[in-house]
Image: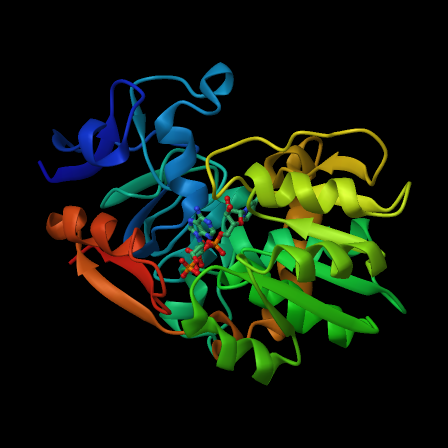
Length: 315
Ligand SMILES: NC(=O)c1ccc[n+]([C@@H]2O[C@H](COP(=O)([O-])OP(=O)(O)OC[C@H]3O[C@@H](n4cnc5c(N)ncnc54)[C@H](OP(=O)(O)O)[C@@H]3O)[C@@H](O)[C@H]2O)c1
Protein backbone atom coordinates (compact mmCIF):
# COMPACT_ATOMS: atom_id res chain seq x y z
CA UNK A 1 0.00 0.00 0.00
CA UNK A 2 1.41 3.44 -0.96
CA UNK A 3 1.43 6.36 1.41
CA UNK A 4 -0.06 9.77 0.75
CA UNK A 5 1.56 12.77 2.45
CA UNK A 6 -0.54 15.90 2.87
CA UNK A 7 -0.06 19.36 4.38
CA UNK A 8 -3.23 19.66 6.41
CA UNK A 9 -4.85 21.59 9.27
CA UNK A 10 -7.32 20.56 11.96
CA UNK A 11 -8.01 24.02 13.38
CA UNK A 12 -7.79 27.60 12.10
CA UNK A 13 -4.84 29.81 12.94
CA UNK A 14 -1.48 31.07 11.66
CA UNK A 15 -0.43 28.66 8.86
CA UNK A 16 3.00 27.93 10.38
CA UNK A 17 1.27 26.94 13.63
CA UNK A 18 -1.72 24.92 12.45
CA UNK A 19 -0.36 23.22 9.32
CA UNK A 20 1.23 19.79 9.76
CA UNK A 21 2.44 17.01 7.50
CA UNK A 22 0.23 13.97 7.68
CA UNK A 23 0.94 10.49 6.27
CA UNK A 24 -1.95 8.20 5.44
CA UNK A 25 -2.34 4.93 3.56
CA UNK A 26 -3.58 5.61 0.06
CA UNK A 27 -7.13 4.27 -0.04
CA UNK A 28 -8.45 2.30 -3.05
CA UNK A 29 -9.54 4.65 -5.85
CA UNK A 30 -13.35 4.97 -6.17
CA UNK A 31 -14.36 3.74 -9.66
CA UNK A 32 -15.69 7.07 -10.90
CA UNK A 33 -12.62 9.13 -9.93
CA UNK A 34 -9.19 9.76 -11.42
CA UNK A 35 -6.00 9.73 -9.34
CA UNK A 36 -3.41 12.47 -9.84
CA UNK A 37 0.18 12.36 -8.58
CA UNK A 38 1.09 15.96 -7.79
CA UNK A 39 4.26 17.50 -9.22
CA UNK A 40 4.25 21.16 -8.16
CA UNK A 41 1.94 23.51 -6.24
CA UNK A 42 2.55 27.17 -5.41
CA UNK A 43 1.96 28.92 -2.11
CA UNK A 44 -0.17 32.01 -2.72
CA UNK A 45 -1.72 34.40 -0.19
CA UNK A 46 -5.02 32.97 -1.46
CA UNK A 47 -3.98 29.53 -0.16
CA UNK A 48 -3.03 30.86 3.25
CA UNK A 49 -5.96 33.13 4.05
CA UNK A 50 -8.53 30.29 4.47
CA UNK A 51 -6.16 28.50 6.88
CA UNK A 52 -6.40 31.49 9.23
CA UNK A 53 -10.17 31.00 9.43
CA UNK A 54 -11.13 33.99 7.26
CA UNK A 55 -13.66 31.79 5.44
CA UNK A 56 -14.50 29.48 8.32
CA UNK A 57 -18.17 29.38 7.34
CA UNK A 58 -17.25 27.52 4.14
CA UNK A 59 -14.12 25.59 5.15
CA UNK A 60 -14.72 22.15 6.61
CA UNK A 61 -12.11 20.79 9.03
CA UNK A 62 -9.89 18.82 8.91
CA UNK A 63 -8.71 20.16 5.56
CA UNK A 64 -5.79 19.67 3.18
CA UNK A 65 -4.45 23.07 2.11
CA UNK A 66 -3.72 24.39 -1.39
CA UNK A 67 -5.92 25.52 -4.26
CA UNK A 68 -3.81 24.95 -7.35
CA UNK A 69 -0.97 22.95 -8.84
CA UNK A 70 -0.06 20.52 -11.59
CA UNK A 71 0.15 16.73 -11.53
CA UNK A 72 0.04 13.59 -13.68
CA UNK A 73 -2.91 11.22 -13.99
CA UNK A 74 -1.91 7.77 -12.72
CA UNK A 75 -5.34 6.06 -12.78
CA UNK A 76 -8.65 6.92 -14.42
CA UNK A 77 -12.07 5.37 -15.10
CA UNK A 78 -12.64 3.90 -18.57
CA UNK A 79 -14.46 7.07 -19.69
CA UNK A 80 -11.33 9.13 -18.99
CA UNK A 81 -8.59 6.69 -20.10
CA UNK A 82 -7.31 9.31 -22.57
CA UNK A 83 -6.07 11.31 -19.55
CA UNK A 84 -3.73 8.55 -18.29
CA UNK A 85 -0.14 9.85 -18.11
CA UNK A 86 -1.23 13.41 -18.98
CA UNK A 87 -0.32 16.52 -17.06
CA UNK A 88 -3.44 18.07 -15.59
CA UNK A 89 -4.61 20.74 -13.18
CA UNK A 90 -6.55 18.91 -10.44
CA UNK A 91 -8.65 21.84 -9.23
CA UNK A 92 -12.01 22.22 -7.55
CA UNK A 93 -11.63 19.09 -5.42
CA UNK A 94 -9.70 18.65 -2.21
CA UNK A 95 -6.48 20.47 -1.36
CA UNK A 96 -3.54 20.34 -3.77
CA UNK A 97 -0.78 20.25 -1.14
CA UNK A 98 -0.62 16.47 -1.09
CA UNK A 99 1.18 13.80 -3.09
CA UNK A 100 -1.97 12.14 -4.47
CA UNK A 101 -5.37 13.63 -5.23
CA UNK A 102 -8.54 11.80 -6.28
CA UNK A 103 -10.71 13.97 -8.55
CA UNK A 104 -13.76 14.07 -10.79
CA UNK A 105 -12.15 13.45 -14.23
CA UNK A 106 -14.64 15.84 -15.89
CA UNK A 107 -13.12 18.73 -13.96
CA UNK A 108 -9.46 17.93 -14.71
CA UNK A 109 -7.82 20.50 -16.98
CA UNK A 110 -5.30 18.95 -19.40
CA UNK A 111 -2.16 21.09 -19.71
CA UNK A 112 -1.02 21.90 -23.27
CA UNK A 113 2.39 20.37 -24.08
CA UNK A 114 4.05 23.74 -24.64
CA UNK A 115 3.18 25.07 -21.16
CA UNK A 116 6.07 24.45 -18.69
CA UNK A 117 5.30 22.79 -15.34
CA UNK A 118 6.23 25.95 -13.51
CA UNK A 119 3.62 28.03 -15.31
CA UNK A 120 0.99 25.28 -15.31
CA UNK A 121 1.25 24.98 -11.52
CA UNK A 122 0.39 28.70 -11.21
CA UNK A 123 -2.10 28.98 -14.07
CA UNK A 124 -5.27 29.15 -12.04
CA UNK A 125 -5.65 31.41 -8.98
CA UNK A 126 -4.04 34.63 -10.14
CA UNK A 127 -4.41 34.43 -13.94
CA UNK A 128 -8.03 33.32 -13.75
CA UNK A 129 -8.83 36.00 -11.19
CA UNK A 130 -7.22 38.69 -13.39
CA UNK A 131 -9.04 37.41 -16.47
CA UNK A 132 -12.45 37.46 -14.80
CA UNK A 133 -11.86 40.78 -13.03
CA UNK A 134 -11.15 42.43 -16.38
CA UNK A 135 -14.18 40.83 -18.01
CA UNK A 136 -16.47 41.89 -15.17
CA UNK A 137 -15.05 45.44 -14.96
CA UNK A 138 -13.74 46.29 -18.47
CA UNK A 139 -10.95 48.87 -18.55
CA UNK A 140 -10.88 50.07 -22.18
CA UNK A 141 -10.19 53.81 -22.24
CA UNK A 142 -9.97 53.94 -18.44
CA UNK A 143 -7.51 55.21 -15.85
CA UNK A 144 -6.77 52.19 -13.66
CA UNK A 145 -5.40 52.18 -10.10
CA UNK A 146 -3.99 48.97 -8.55
CA UNK A 147 -2.74 48.24 -5.05
CA UNK A 148 -0.43 45.45 -3.88
CA UNK A 149 1.42 46.26 -7.09
CA UNK A 150 4.35 43.95 -6.28
CA UNK A 151 2.11 40.89 -6.48
CA UNK A 152 1.74 38.51 -9.42
CA UNK A 153 -2.00 39.15 -9.60
CA UNK A 154 -1.48 42.93 -9.85
CA UNK A 155 1.22 42.45 -12.50
CA UNK A 156 -1.16 40.36 -14.59
CA UNK A 157 -3.92 42.92 -14.12
CA UNK A 158 -1.57 45.70 -15.22
CA UNK A 159 -0.26 43.92 -18.31
CA UNK A 160 -3.67 42.71 -19.43
CA UNK A 161 -5.28 46.11 -18.72
CA UNK A 162 -2.98 47.65 -21.33
CA UNK A 163 -3.74 44.83 -23.78
CA UNK A 164 -7.42 45.56 -23.30
CA UNK A 165 -7.05 49.24 -24.01
CA UNK A 166 -6.66 50.93 -20.62
CA UNK A 167 -5.44 54.52 -20.94
CA UNK A 168 -3.11 54.38 -17.95
CA UNK A 169 -2.32 52.17 -14.95
CA UNK A 170 -0.90 53.30 -11.60
CA UNK A 171 0.27 50.82 -8.98
CA UNK A 172 0.69 51.29 -5.22
CA UNK A 173 3.71 49.29 -4.02
CA UNK A 174 5.15 48.65 -0.56
CA UNK A 175 8.74 47.62 -1.33
CA UNK A 176 10.67 49.86 -3.79
CA UNK A 177 12.31 46.77 -5.26
CA UNK A 178 9.20 46.54 -7.46
CA UNK A 179 9.63 49.98 -9.09
CA UNK A 180 11.75 48.86 -12.05
CA UNK A 181 9.37 46.10 -13.01
CA UNK A 182 6.36 48.40 -12.72
CA UNK A 183 8.11 50.88 -15.01
CA UNK A 184 8.82 48.08 -17.49
CA UNK A 185 5.14 47.17 -17.47
CA UNK A 186 4.26 50.82 -18.17
CA UNK A 187 2.74 51.21 -14.70
CA UNK A 188 3.13 54.51 -12.84
CA UNK A 189 4.63 53.43 -9.47
CA UNK A 190 3.21 55.01 -6.31
CA UNK A 191 4.75 54.41 -2.89
CA UNK A 192 2.39 53.33 -0.10
CA UNK A 193 3.92 56.18 1.92
CA UNK A 194 3.05 58.87 -0.66
CA UNK A 195 -0.46 59.44 0.67
CA UNK A 196 -0.99 62.76 -1.16
CA UNK A 197 0.01 61.15 -4.47
CA UNK A 198 -2.30 58.19 -3.80
CA UNK A 199 -5.17 60.53 -2.99
CA UNK A 200 -4.78 62.64 -6.11
CA UNK A 201 -4.30 59.58 -8.36
CA UNK A 202 -7.46 58.05 -6.86
CA UNK A 203 -9.31 61.29 -7.61
CA UNK A 204 -8.56 60.78 -11.33
CA UNK A 205 -9.12 56.98 -11.43
CA UNK A 206 -12.02 55.36 -13.29
CA UNK A 207 -11.58 51.98 -11.58
CA UNK A 208 -9.60 50.52 -8.68
CA UNK A 209 -8.55 46.89 -8.16
CA UNK A 210 -7.54 46.60 -4.51
CA UNK A 211 -5.58 43.69 -2.99
CA UNK A 212 -4.70 45.46 0.27
CA UNK A 213 -7.66 46.56 2.38
CA UNK A 214 -6.85 48.61 5.50
CA UNK A 215 -6.13 52.35 5.74
CA UNK A 216 -4.67 52.78 2.22
CA UNK A 217 -7.65 51.10 0.59
CA UNK A 218 -10.01 53.17 2.74
CA UNK A 219 -8.19 56.37 1.72
CA UNK A 220 -8.46 55.43 -1.96
CA UNK A 221 -12.16 54.55 -1.65
CA UNK A 222 -12.89 57.91 0.01
CA UNK A 223 -10.91 59.81 -2.66
CA UNK A 224 -12.71 58.35 -5.68
CA UNK A 225 -15.32 60.30 -7.59
CA UNK A 226 -18.85 59.18 -6.66
CA UNK A 227 -19.82 55.91 -8.29
CA UNK A 228 -16.32 54.93 -9.46
CA UNK A 229 -15.98 51.18 -8.84
CA UNK A 230 -13.54 50.09 -6.15
CA UNK A 231 -13.13 46.34 -6.53
CA UNK A 232 -11.76 44.68 -3.39
CA UNK A 233 -10.24 41.29 -4.24
CA UNK A 234 -7.65 40.83 -1.47
CA UNK A 235 -6.76 41.82 2.10
CA UNK A 236 -2.97 41.67 2.14
CA UNK A 237 -2.94 44.18 5.01
CA UNK A 238 -5.14 41.84 7.06
CA UNK A 239 -7.54 44.74 7.67
CA UNK A 240 -10.93 45.52 6.15
CA UNK A 241 -11.84 48.47 3.92
CA UNK A 242 -13.80 51.10 5.81
CA UNK A 243 -16.12 53.22 3.65
CA UNK A 244 -16.29 56.83 4.88
CA UNK A 245 -18.85 59.28 3.48
CA UNK A 246 -19.00 59.91 -0.27
CA UNK A 247 -16.57 58.24 -2.61
CA UNK A 248 -16.36 55.19 -4.83
CA UNK A 249 -18.68 52.21 -5.06
CA UNK A 250 -17.32 49.27 -3.05
CA UNK A 251 -17.59 45.93 -4.82
CA UNK A 252 -16.11 42.57 -3.92
CA UNK A 253 -14.62 39.80 -5.99
CA UNK A 254 -14.04 36.16 -5.03
CA UNK A 255 -12.90 33.76 -7.74
CA UNK A 256 -14.76 30.98 -5.99
CA UNK A 257 -18.11 32.78 -6.48
CA UNK A 258 -17.61 32.71 -10.26
CA UNK A 259 -17.52 28.89 -10.26
CA UNK A 260 -21.09 28.47 -9.07
CA UNK A 261 -23.15 26.72 -11.75
CA UNK A 262 -20.23 26.50 -14.19
CA UNK A 263 -20.46 23.39 -16.39
CA UNK A 264 -17.34 21.24 -17.03
CA UNK A 265 -17.34 22.54 -20.62
CA UNK A 266 -17.45 26.20 -19.54
CA UNK A 267 -14.75 25.45 -16.99
CA UNK A 268 -12.43 24.03 -19.70
CA UNK A 269 -13.26 26.93 -22.04
CA UNK A 270 -11.99 29.40 -19.45
CA UNK A 271 -8.59 27.70 -19.63
CA UNK A 272 -8.65 27.56 -23.45
CA UNK A 273 -8.78 31.34 -23.29
CA UNK A 274 -6.18 31.59 -20.53
CA UNK A 275 -3.32 29.36 -21.76
CA UNK A 276 -2.18 31.58 -24.68
CA UNK A 277 -2.08 34.64 -22.39
CA UNK A 278 0.26 33.16 -19.76
CA UNK A 279 3.66 34.81 -19.99
CA UNK A 280 6.62 33.83 -17.80
CA UNK A 281 7.94 37.40 -17.93
CA UNK A 282 4.79 38.69 -16.24
CA UNK A 283 4.23 35.78 -13.85
CA UNK A 284 7.87 35.89 -12.74
CA UNK A 285 10.12 33.07 -11.62
CA UNK A 286 9.43 30.54 -8.88
CA UNK A 287 11.56 29.10 -6.10
CA UNK A 288 11.13 25.40 -5.42
CA UNK A 289 10.88 23.86 -1.95
CA UNK A 290 10.57 20.16 -1.21
CA UNK A 291 7.25 19.39 0.49
CA UNK A 292 9.21 18.40 3.59
CA UNK A 293 10.70 21.93 3.71
CA UNK A 294 7.28 23.59 3.75
CA UNK A 295 8.20 25.75 6.75
CA UNK A 296 11.02 27.36 4.75
CA UNK A 297 8.56 27.98 1.92
CA UNK A 298 6.12 29.70 4.31
CA UNK A 299 8.91 31.88 5.69
CA UNK A 300 9.82 32.86 2.13
CA UNK A 301 6.19 33.87 1.37
CA UNK A 302 6.43 36.44 4.16
CA UNK A 303 9.59 38.07 2.76
CA UNK A 304 8.83 41.58 1.51
CA UNK A 305 10.27 42.39 -1.91
CA UNK A 306 10.51 38.81 -3.12
CA UNK A 307 10.02 38.33 -6.84
CA UNK A 308 9.85 34.53 -6.83
CA UNK A 309 6.74 32.55 -6.05
CA UNK A 310 7.39 29.65 -3.64
CA UNK A 311 6.40 26.32 -5.17
CA UNK A 312 6.17 23.01 -3.30
CA UNK A 313 7.77 20.01 -5.04
CA UNK A 314 6.24 16.57 -4.42
CA UNK A 315 9.31 14.46 -5.18
N1 LIG B 1 -10.41 37.32 -4.56
C1 LIG B 1 -9.86 36.36 -5.28
O1 LIG B 1 -10.53 35.48 -5.77
C2 LIG B 1 -8.36 36.39 -5.48
C3 LIG B 1 -7.78 35.60 -6.46
C4 LIG B 1 -6.40 35.71 -6.65
C5 LIG B 1 -5.62 36.54 -5.84
N2 LIG B 1 -6.25 37.25 -4.86
C6 LIG B 1 -5.50 38.15 -3.97
O2 LIG B 1 -4.51 38.84 -4.70
C7 LIG B 1 -3.51 39.26 -3.81
C8 LIG B 1 -2.15 38.99 -4.42
O3 LIG B 1 -1.93 37.59 -4.51
P1 LIG B 1 -0.60 37.06 -5.26
O4 LIG B 1 -0.60 35.58 -5.22
O5 LIG B 1 -0.52 37.74 -6.57
O6 LIG B 1 0.53 37.63 -4.29
P2 LIG B 1 2.10 37.45 -4.37
O7 LIG B 1 2.56 37.37 -5.77
O8 LIG B 1 2.49 36.34 -3.46
O9 LIG B 1 2.64 38.82 -3.79
C9 LIG B 1 2.24 39.24 -2.52
C10 LIG B 1 2.62 40.70 -2.42
O10 LIG B 1 1.87 41.24 -1.36
C11 LIG B 1 2.55 42.33 -0.85
N3 LIG B 1 2.15 42.47 0.55
C12 LIG B 1 2.05 41.52 1.49
N4 LIG B 1 1.62 42.04 2.64
C13 LIG B 1 1.45 43.35 2.42
C14 LIG B 1 1.02 44.43 3.22
N5 LIG B 1 0.70 44.26 4.50
N6 LIG B 1 0.96 45.64 2.66
C15 LIG B 1 1.30 45.82 1.37
N7 LIG B 1 1.71 44.85 0.56
C16 LIG B 1 1.78 43.62 1.09
C17 LIG B 1 4.02 42.03 -0.99
O11 LIG B 1 4.58 43.22 -1.43
P3 LIG B 1 6.05 43.72 -1.09
O12 LIG B 1 6.98 42.80 -1.83
O13 LIG B 1 6.04 45.10 -1.67
O14 LIG B 1 6.23 43.71 0.38
C18 LIG B 1 4.05 40.96 -2.10
O15 LIG B 1 4.65 41.47 -3.26
C19 LIG B 1 -3.78 38.53 -2.49
O16 LIG B 1 -4.45 39.40 -1.61
C20 LIG B 1 -4.74 37.43 -2.89
O17 LIG B 1 -5.57 37.01 -1.84
C21 LIG B 1 -7.59 37.19 -4.66
